[in-house]
Length: 172
Image 1 (cartoon, rainbow, N blue to C red):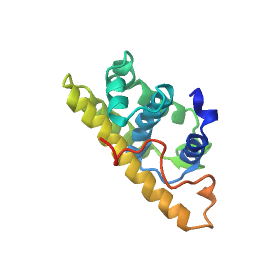
Image 2: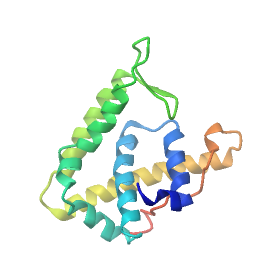
Image 3: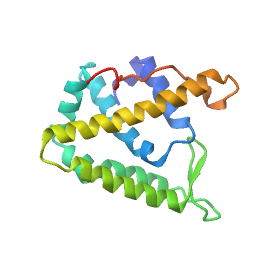
């Protein structure tokens, strides 16, 4: 992400998204789509959400990243590279969480469900899938952020802001 250094709101969000704990399995994969949109949003100088999603689904690498699941598999592979010494699971150094083998299986299950949702020739269905994944991610983030903002003792509070860089639910 090239222009991140210029945008403090984006930097704060990315720091928060790395260290936040307790992400449900599906949210971890929805986040990847949101981060892809965020990168494109910055490259295109912050266009409206509608244009951003259409640019994403019409991009040359949409099939490779989303329908074939490359973006999801890279994330899973990254997790699998950090097994715990006692073989109990896989360690995420950013959030200091351990994902067990059941969590990994769930990641694969969600990955295949998301790929099947995105693997359609009907553009409006692709659009709706991207929008829905991002809206669900935003709902989870806003709920988590509001909990953290209220609790000043939370260690996760570092760089917590009230919103996300791209507003999903307020647009369409």
